[in-house]
Length: 158
Length: 218
Image 1 (cartoon, rainbow over the protein chains, first blue to last red):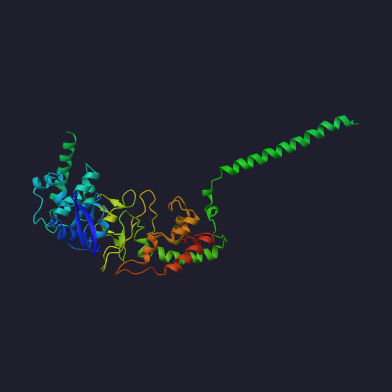
Image 2 (tube, rainbow over the protein chains, first blue to last red):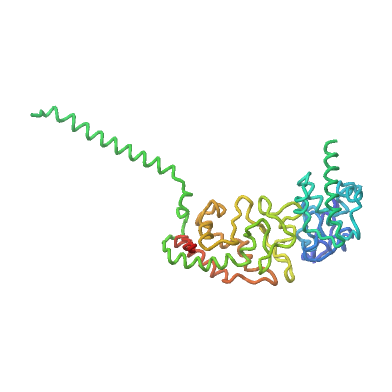
């Protein structure tokens, strides 16, 4: 066990954890933030995606020691009032069915829109192919990402 | 009959002209030499390595090198397309992550998002290395589908091998990402030679001249 400090959603968490512990465990069980989900545990499904220094890492295979000293953002910290364009578009399109994978979907989509404000369908496929949805909401996910891109551009243009 | 005075200027002229001509030729040679790029010949930068060209030894060593480079542990990250390969059958990587400009992936699908600094425990989990990536888009360094002749030529060409000279090629055998092929994580076969055997064949191939095996007859 080791004393580690994690910065999650701009808040410092002092944790006593095995350095090999998956970041997902630390986020959910030690920091108590339950929005990030466990899916496969082997980086295959994307349910556990969080941002680590702005990249969409899979927290189930990321050791907590790798996250120490870095800036972690979970679905709870993506925006102050759940008003990130992706979150708003998700609500407007009513994307989720069961919803289990959608914190990961939204975190991945947010990185896509940061890097590419006007993604094509092919860009969306390239960015989102690692996020699995067993309910098959892919068409709504794509539609919502296009809508979020429009919202983001409108905000940027004032 | 020629007088002494008539001969002297002629002799003086020839000696001076020859001296000037020699000096000019030396200067031209020196200037031309300075314009010759050292990159023209990778062996110029071989440093401490002794070059003792032997095409038969070199090509023989490359046969071992080729077997390793075409094994899944090496070839899977040198695909013909922009999606890495995966597994001992070299299928397209699940989730179809793309190479991206610098070889580290795109958007939410960067290599390091799943591939950690070390292997993840468990069967068929993501293998790890701090530098996990594909070759960049502007120099894909494709292994997949290459014949021994084509691959040897490509590896020796600085414009296709990541701008590596001979010394850098030799050092590349000990790169941590190359070494990761011999620590592939659970459920993956090792390359057909040990790293020691591979490195010996690699250096032999290079120091014996980096010769390419003959292309197969059409």
